[in-house]
Image (cartoon, rainbow, N blue to C red; front, side, top):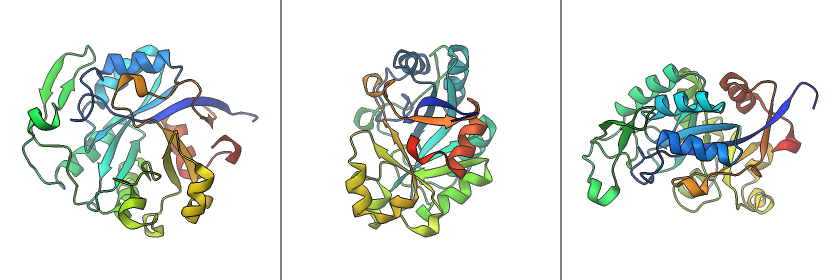
Length: 248
């Protein structure tokens, strides 16, 4: 593909800020494992928050890996949608908006796990007191257009799963959401899934790990995305406007 380079990616990774994320998922450990696995582009996508993105992006830049700030938003329908942003500023503004549009229920760390905010040296700088494992007040059909207001884009997460997916919650991927990309797990039988949900035939597909643990990050055998350059801007353009079908 003239003018394009293929990059290995994993666009759905949780840090130790997600209450269900392992405490070993610190910025340095996460980025270090991504480097060991041969990943070139990653995204940090904690549940309903972007607050560990600054540290992950700083560590990744030192390691020569492109890290994109993001969030796995839980919608009002209890469906998960991955939101990615071109800039850290856009991600943090989106974070503030979501914080104002979700219920505030105190976390019980002994039950759900700690929600740890770390710096680029993996040192604790705070703990989120409100539980992140809740549904926001944002509907599935609102997420993509809302993310775009903050310089981002969005796609339904793990649509082959029978829980916390748009397909499980609604029975299909509604056209009102404007989604052009959908995520499946690495183990997904994509041909079979496309028969079950014909709307996937016209959508681009990404395969991500949804890692909550270091040993489940995607490997260098992961699929690749062709881009003109390894930048967040190029990645977001590809997700919005498409890439070669043979590479999905």
